[in-house]
Image 1 (cartoon, rainbow, N blue to C red):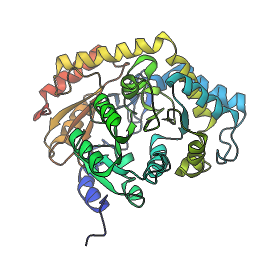
Image 2: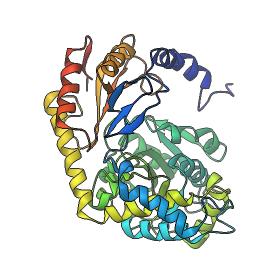
Image 3: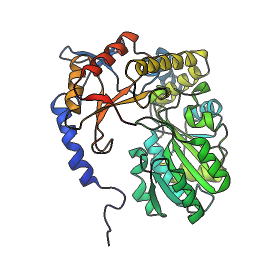
Length: 405
């Protein structure tokens, strides 16, 4: 009977994946240090490049109001990190932020220092029944969900049954609901390699069965939807007690930390999160500078400026699609994948870097073996000239082509 590697296999992941990582590092594509000036990175040896592998889709991480917001919060509250669990003592900064985000996203918000920390704390409490109506659900993890969720599978499996389903396989999920009664489906709202979850179809299943859903919508928050509510909330305006959405406040939000959108949860459930949700309940709240940056970003989200940044991002995505069509063409999602053979992907990325563009070579375990490629990530601050030049160079690279659908 197999008792090891039921839900993760570091030996396999490291032994295969390190071949690519070592090659990338050996050729200067990993561990790069660069100073950001005028939306380009400049290395100590004099090389400069445009980053096409950054998740700050709206370039808000460089916004002067967000930087000043971090500084202003430090001055207002007079402390960087009052190191004590939020279950015992909170400073007003955190409460101010959660009230602001709750209004902005029309949801009860609990913050964490990262989406990974939020997931590590919340998913085991769903598995144990403490955030799923007192019933231990069968946890069904989407095969393609982000590693920040996948790594909790062994922990959840210590509380309840855990399964893995094919990517967004609605029939598998419905069959699990019929078989087990209470099910919790864990997936990305916006996948880190492109594409969105079938939110409306999943909501229809929730109306028929006792289905709980945990979405990580980090890649679409701010970049998508009115006031930047993200893909999931744009298609799910109200959250009930069977749906949780977590999203980073880094990426397109341009600050730091994470928001857990909980709908209207009872005070008892909120106390469970404060006390038992892993690092959320330790002495690791968001620090004051991060809170100030998030408050400033939230203010920007309430202005027309956010819509203008979203429009610029959409225009840049459309331009790249026109120049270099991929199976993701036409989607509002800001990531495109260009297929390159496993043996060549690092070399193709080296050639782009030498030409002044950083594009991540992606390989196992980021993608399945044999499906390596170049992950092009669009931002609002990229210029038309840069996008046209990048597409021109990629099309001239040997063995570089759009990924098969």
